[in-house]
Image (cartoon, rainbow, N blue to C red; front, side, top):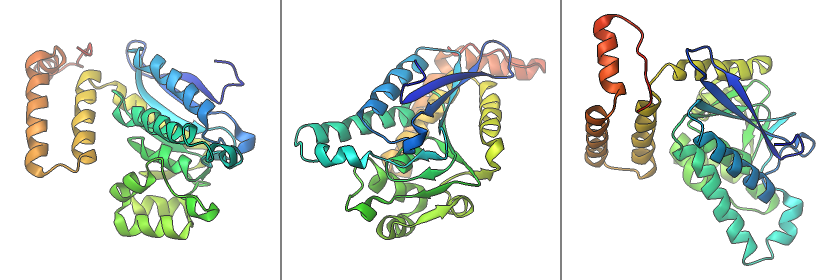
Length: 272
């Protein structure tokens, strides 16, 4: 895609055998703190099509250019969009679907939170598997600060990530967490120096690239399904048992891993 696209992609080679890469998705309107609008969603949707069709991609890293991850929706455009009873609900529906592709996709999605993160930016973070934050990151909801309310997932996903009481505090007050507080809440996994953010994300992706892509995709499916559905222990264990049996009985990677263990060698996974 051209450099003028609201989302651009880089492919970072991973230090593993073969052609494994991490796909780095960069929100690309830094002067506006990378707003989430229809153009952004369309660009992200198309790039996710490319990623899902490319077996070389072993992880997706999501970040923003400039001093912001994303400050959320384009409030100037909302003045017109929120008066349109057809277009506005459709936009929110598209946001749920496109962001949800990160949560439901076959490879890990890691948010690299590089600065201001609010509203739709927080919702983007919450749809990733987990996040690393630069020390400069400031993370909050902020919808209520401008007479808005969350609609892109924050009211559902944030309580699951940090608990109901902390989610309520963040949403109702509109305050922002610094990176260390976000880590203490479990909203991000850890904090790194700003100039190390992308390198640390790629290092995590390299570790994931040594795993069976198929086994990882199945593990992610069960993990997110049980979490998203708030499944009972019994229901979760049933899904885990069924998925595990199917993978182990039908894949090539499961027996290859066992053979490699017995032979004391590195496994050669084929993702099938």
